[in-house]
Length: 72
Image (cartoon, rainbow, N blue to C red; front, top):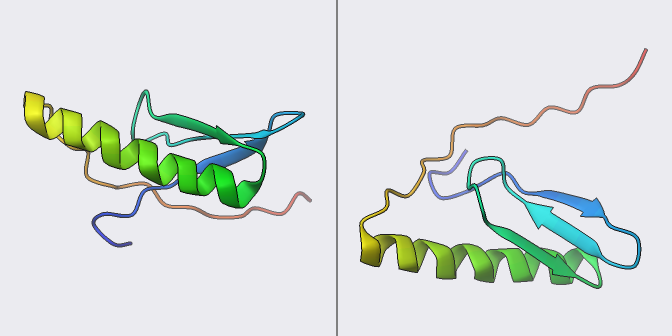
């Protein structure tokens, strides 16, 4: 995994989609489509990290892994 790549969960939220990352608490985004939601999350992440850098909050280092598990 790249050092600057974060796992993002995108969920169907009914009329739209929502996204969050378990590795970046407080960063969320929504959008009308999965692609829009991903783009909005990327923008939210960049803005959040900019604020964190300015205020001395450490940027989390990605460490999670993703595996798809089939049900038996």
